[in-house]
Image 1: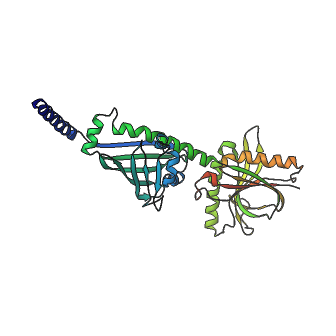
Image 2 (image 1 turned 30 degrees about the vertical axis):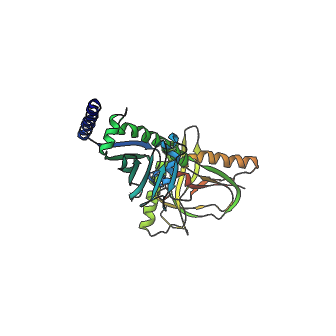
Image 3 (image 1 turned 90 degrees about the vertical axis):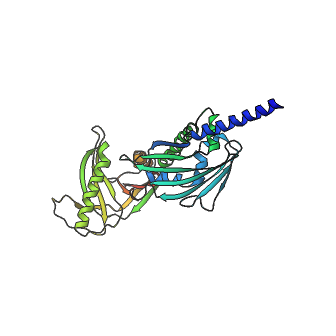
Length: 344
């Protein structure tokens, strides 16, 4: 009997010592994982901001395919929430407490276990870079309870070591999904249409193929400034007319312009001039997607013309009209470009 009593006391002393030792351990934890994703911040933010998307890229879903998910009245934005129940991953809830559109999301996570509930702070930041990519950072921090500190004394990894691989894998999955989303495109040759023509303010330059986008942006800026200073209203979406292409030298002569309602008289030697798009039959092709796919769109347009034995006009100058503004429509997959080839 005395031996049992001594053993009992030893166990009690050991438990007290274990609790005291655990109590001296630093229970704070913090994990931050970052990844560069080649997409605008708005596109990534919109995905992360909606909890229903998490089950697609969240690495924890792989650990338990039978995980039960429940969503609150709203799944995105401030006040959004969801919860999960899992025999393998445990039970918990997540709630969004503040949002700065396209820049930051702050959330609270409550994890439920036999040791009691524990809370963590979760945060996301989206930092757009110069080349159109975005640095996405996902972090979590909190304080372990005494029982949690005791629990992790007997684990082969710390809480940080358990969370970090899951965050890293989840961000990699998110990257793949976002990349597929922003690179999606479609080319549709609508065939022969009647084009009404019209006037436009323009500038002309010769440039190397790889510098076309930069030159366009520069000329659009000059044209818009000229129109603003001279109170000339814009009547349509920006466009580019291709006057000559030298495939051997890789150069292009092009006019970048902005439509106006009527002819504008300017000095002949002015940097910004007024021209007129032709009226008549044209092959129309619509590209929905990034401008990097314009080459394929033009190839499809000319292939259609050849298949249907259609001939260009003697002075045919193909042109593009950009139907929405990339500064407003951030997702390249939603950019719309109309291509026209004047035909006889």
